[in-house]
Image (cartoon, rainbow, N blue to C red):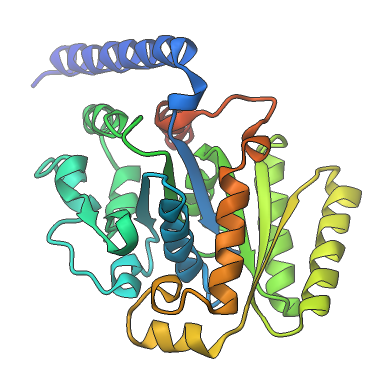
Length: 305
């Protein structure tokens, strides 16, 4: 292929991608906000704070409220949503990126009525897609709109570019931390970076593995105050999940604790968070829900920078 042919092909792809994005914008402007899927990124400043466990149990809690929920494993280094749930998906996101399967093909039914897309190295591969492959993925992802009320993305821990891109593209961000000083410091760094990139990001904070409730509440109040004072932003404290021996037992058995031990303190607290997320007042924001369409547009723009 000579340079003129390559340039013409590149222009065809660019025109096609621009046409898709324009149609997505038009569709978004005409959409009923209540029909749009809510995309939430669940992240943390460091590993070991129970982020994935929170993700899968929150998804099941949301499903118990009658919501259709999809969990997408976006952790590059340790894609383990399937391990936590005790399921063995035949396909994962990598098969979608390669074009072997569609997103609908790789959705696996999980416990408690949730659906799951296992990660593998799919998000890393997504970053390296050609324009044409990215366009194909966008069209594929768009089919998820309206099929689910929530898509929960379990991101990797830390501040890598890949994690940040997924977080910035989401409608909502839930930062999971523990009351330990090192975890709080990392959570603050994560929140600060997110707000530096997007001052309007909608961020909530969850304290996990809590042993002393008053201490956890003080730490959360201190963190939200520091964010307000030094960054000028308000973040929501969405509560805590207690450190519970039953949670540890469920993890060892590769079972969601909310199903194995529904009366446990941790289960009650996760259900409380799910109730908050499904509350109409919580969902009312100056910006209407973005849905899958806007998530893809944001993601595409971030990858092209």
